[in-house]
Length: 563
View 1: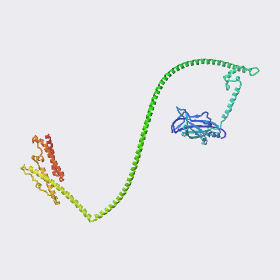
View 2: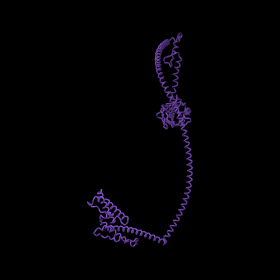
View 3: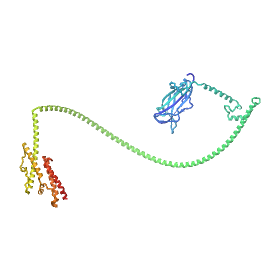
View 4: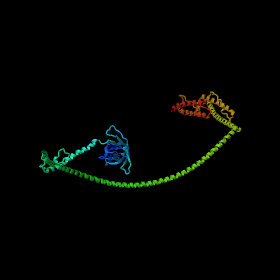
């Protein structure tokens, strides 16, 4: 551009972000090229929390400059220093950081147009930058946050004709004022630019009137009227000054009286306050003495506590040293034991490795032997001698089974022989007093006949059939047998009691006899089951179970009668 232009430089401190602390902050700066009348600052202070962006209020300022393009570029090369201040209610305001921003790069920004601002001839440029805040309250400078700064540069064009014509107009107005001020006071009018001071009026009133002879202008009626007006003004001024002196004296007397009254009231108030202060002072002295006594007691207690604390600390230190030494000894012993155990473990591992090697060799050897054994068994199985040995083992097994079967049959035979003999003896004892003949027992003729101790395989069938016949006869006898009362004396089976028979003594002895008879029947059943020949489905055992059930039912009423 040719010639000076009108530039508008606007600066906006938009936001601030602190990263180390919370504070009430405001921004201030003073920049020489802007020709500021006073430093700029934002108001009111804003609370900025840590790691939070805060927008500052009233942070925009615009400055108008009349400069050429090159001069403005040179002026804005100087960096702008913006200071960040903190407001604290307990301390004086102080800076906590600053920002140095370069404004010259605004000339490198492109021109922009705005329809809402027609005063801009060529548009405006804007520079938006975020600058780090360097801390100033720490020994070493460090970054404490960031500040966003916007710079606007507007070109308002060349100065207008009205602005250029304003300078001669001011000069034209100032010149008559200077001319009138140079004329004598008598020719001054009330519309003059400046009025003479009051002391100057007094001087003029005291001065003699100027001579009017020989001066045509002074002898004119206008001059005479002006002179009279000046004399009247001075007289009125003297009267007003006298009135002011009187008012001043009256006001002075009134003020002195008020001052005297206020002084008396103040003296009375002072005496009363002084007496109250003396009482408060006495109380304070008493409290101070009490506090001093307490302080002395606290100091003594503190000394005693310090001594006790030192003693306990020494004891604790000695105990800690002893514990540390014991712990070190235990650690050393544990390390030695650990080394010994590690050595033992290494030796055991070596021994285990050797044993595993031996085991592997033995397993290989066993595998070889098993293979050899299998081959030998295959060879032996194919030979005639092996077949003969197998047949011999089978025959021996059959012989053992036949022998055990014969032993069982012989034991059963002996058992039945004894039972049959016992039963025959009891039947013979019961048949002696009776006249009626009884059914002959087929097996009694053979009961006393001794049986051979060893039987061959050919006699097994005959013995089995004979035993079966004996079982059938015994079952038939058990169903038809009705023992007499005389047999109860020989611990035999007892008959059931009949209703209405017997004396009280006999009735008292019946429960014992019924119990013995029931016990005898139970023993007989167990012996038959233990022999292995009878089962629970056998007719003999079923008949015996019926007798046991009948004896149990007979034992119940007999016991009730005995009681």
